Length: 101
Image 1 (cartoon, rainbow, N blue to C red):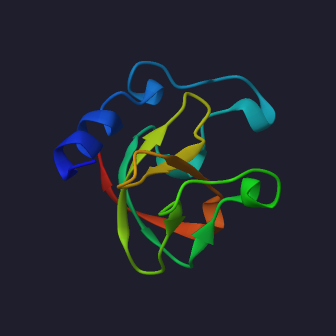
Image 2 (image 1 turned 90 degrees about the horizontal axis):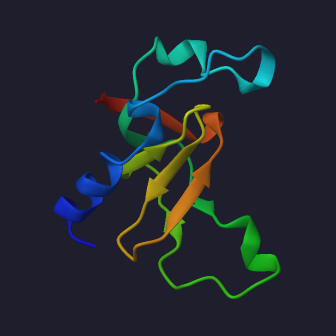
């Protein structure tokens, strides 16, 4: 995927249309201050957890200190958009938001 295609995919984030106000773990993260992440910088290298069970396409990895466009669902789950077209789900401890929509 080109950078433009990654940006286009990030702009399809469901959180841009609706953010959950349900109680508990289903609430959109308070530390996002009702904003939606656009890009994140990785705090560590992250590989797919699925690689233990299925064949994961080459390039499905987020590298430490690299920045990635992200797709965010309405509950605040963040997935990096990778050059190979895959999305890789991230835990909050694995990234820092560098840009917001």
